[in-house]
Every structure is written in C-alpha cells, then in structure tokens.
Image (cartoon, rainbow over all chains, first blue to last red; front, side, top):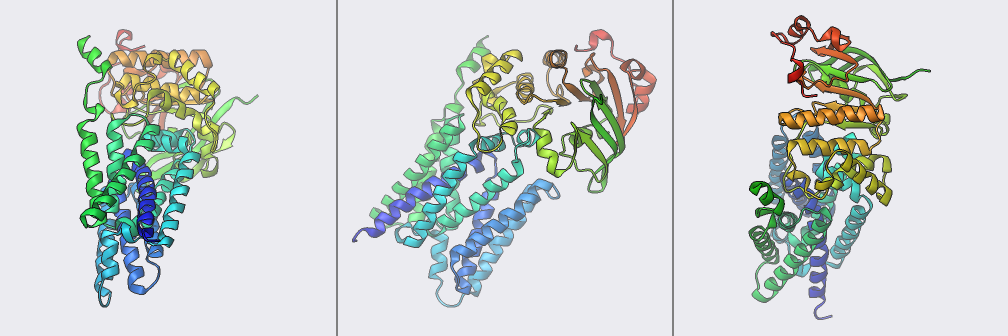
Length: 274
Length: 255
C-alpha cells in the first residue's frame, strides 16, 4: 500500500504517545525524572551494543534498561549512596558505554545514529507490534493495580506501612519505564524519548489534582505531540523525533502558562480574606 | 488467657555500623497505652519498626499479634497495624485528595485486584467526620496544614481497623493548638476503641495523660520503665536527656 509507512507512523505515534505518557505520570509524580533519563540512556547503550555485535538492538536495549532499573532501585532505596550520586554514576557509565560501542563500530554508523534521533516514518512492522503489545500490557497493569500504584506514587512510605507490596510496585514502575523506552527507541530515538515521557505528564500535572484525570490527559497530550510532530516532519521535511519533542515542549509550556494550580483557589482566597 | 499482643525478646537492630537497638525486650498487653520517650537517636522509631516488621532484626525475636515478625509475615502484620509518623513534606500539587489518601488505609486489607466498595467509602466518610475533616475531604492532600494532615493520617490509620496503633511523634512540627487537638483525638480513639497504642515522643509536653506505662529509651536500650508517676521525675529525666529537665506543669501540657 502506498501510504503504509504513514499508517505505521500514525499507529506508532498513538501507542508511543499513550505508553510514554502513562509511564511519565508515575515518573513525574514520584519525582524520578533523573532515574528515567538514566534508564533511557541505558536502553540506548544496549541498542548500540546490539548494532555493534549484530544482534537485535531491541534485545540489547531491553536488557540494559531493565538491568539499570534493577541496579538503580536498590541503590536509591538502601541509602548507601545519595540517590543522585548513585543514579549519576550509572548514567555516566551508560553514556560512556554508548560512546564506546559507537566508537568500536566499523564502517558507517547510520543505524546507530537513527537510534539517537529515531524515525517514526520508517518504523518497522515488527517494532510496531512490539510497541502495541507494550501499550496493551502497560494499560492492563495500570487498570489491574491502579489503587496500589496510586498509593505508591503518592504516599510510598504509607503504602509500605499499610501492607501494600510497595517495593514490588515501585520496581514494576521502573521496569515498565525501561520496557516503554525500549519499545519507543526506534521511532522516537534514545536521546529524545525521555522528553515524550516527561513533557505530556508534566503538562497534565499542571492541570489537575486527580490521578485518574492525569492518566487521561497525559496520553492525549502524548498522542497530540506524536501526531502533530509527525505531520510537521512529513510536511516540513524535518527530523520526526525532534518535531515530536518540540511539540510536547510547547504543550508543556502552554499547560504551565494556563495552569489553575498557579492561581489562588477559592478556599485560599476565603482563608486570606477571613 | 494470654493478652500479650507484642512480645519482643533481646532485639538487636543495626543500620550498617550503627546499632540502633541493643538487646531490647518488651511485652505489651492488649488495650495498653504506652508512652515511649527519650532523646533523639535513642531507638524509639526503630522499636516501632520492629513491631510492624519494617525493621530487620539481626538478633532476638519478636512476636506480634501471634505472628513471628519476619519478612514473610511483615505485609500481613502491617495490614493489622496503624502507623502514623510525623508530618512530612508533601508536594502541594500531588494528584490525590484527602478522601483518597484516607482510603489508602483500606488497600492493604483489600488485597490485590479488588476495588474499594461503597461500604468502604462510607467508612472513610464516617472516620473523616469523626476526626473533624469531613469538610476537607475533597481538598488536595498537599493543601492541608500540619494539624489537618495529621488528622487525615489518623483517619487513614483508623479505616485500617488496626489492632495496634503506632504513633511516631505525631505532634512534632505542628502548632500548639493543633498539637492539643491531635492529642485529644488520640486519647478519644483509645477510650472509644481500646486499641493497643504505642506513642513515641521526645517532647515531654506531648505525652498523653492516658499513658499507663512509660518506657524511657537511651542509646538503643530500654533504660527504665514504669508508671508515669514513677518515671516523670526531674532527676530521672535529667539523667535520661543528659541535661536539666523540669517537669511541665499541668497547664503547659497539651491534653
């Protein structure tokens, strides 16, 4: 079909926009932004290892992102090191490995560079199926464990104290972040995926005090970012990953500018007056 | 009939090189209201974490509500124990309101894959009315004052229908009027439900008058224990805190 690539791109934008934004809601609410950046770079390094050694880059990305989540979680939890320090060490290691694998690659590095920027217009059927499956699993997990996730991301210590398996849920969130990043690597790119995780969720965070609404608004922003970015890429002939990220940043800027959380609430005004 | 709900024998807890609890033994009977005082770093909070299974014993044993405390029983135990810590810093934009926060108390007992039902929401509303927070039930949790936040935390612990109530400096960092209100509420709850209560504080003025026994902790050990009348003596307390301490007059006490 003539426009098969465009159909794939639209579907990849739909799935990538939904999954990244849902995971983003957890990352933003728990203030785990740096952990997310670190996992994204780990996925990127793993994919480059795959390209260098000739195995499927998605497998490398998945193994590296899950391994980094498994290392960072306990390091941050046990408090042996300051969380920023431990995440910073893993982050710089992953960046170093990414550059090492790129440096060791013989010949042209076209595939490696495409993992940097991503290309939603050339997303493969196989990758699209993987992305759709990850989207379905993430939505299913959120529906099944909504109350536990809500407790853990808003009151982690309380969740632990009332007998919720809070540590398991926390690691589930980290691993979901890793899998989502892996699935979106080819379409959005290793360097840019993180903006798609952060920006729509951060924009939704500005607009509501309800987690349910946040989980609906953020994916809508994610899909708009992907589709508007995709259109800009197609019509203006600019890199798709960059146009998606810029669109999501504009949405965040608008949400912040018009955020009701910046204004005084009625009860606050009453308190000040009274 | 044995009414012992907490039995700790020779408990030792350490965090890396620091020994937080050294050979502590304690028995608590059902319905007791026990005050635990001592300077910062005395091991008071660690003792509470041994009871709810969050603190790992490196030596000794603990039996709580008939269950040996270990990693396997920890989650089951915590579902039966209400825990209120001191006011924490909360992001004012957090996407959860007071009613939802209180409902979190039910989640442990509910278990995985089960959603809260109408009777559970009604129970939450009832408890919110009891702690005087019904009018704030839809307010974002991050918009509460320290005293209001502690009322919500107590409500959350109550909907858990706890058999043991652990209160870890619940009146720290809040204004004196709110402190008095929180203490009155805690005492009212004990009078009403007879829940076994352990109340930790380093501030003698925050000690509820309903305390039946006072445990004095110092350097990870139970230093002395007895009735409040026998323990609240200037000479004993000055030795406990390592500085001259005067007993607060009744009028200074918030209850």
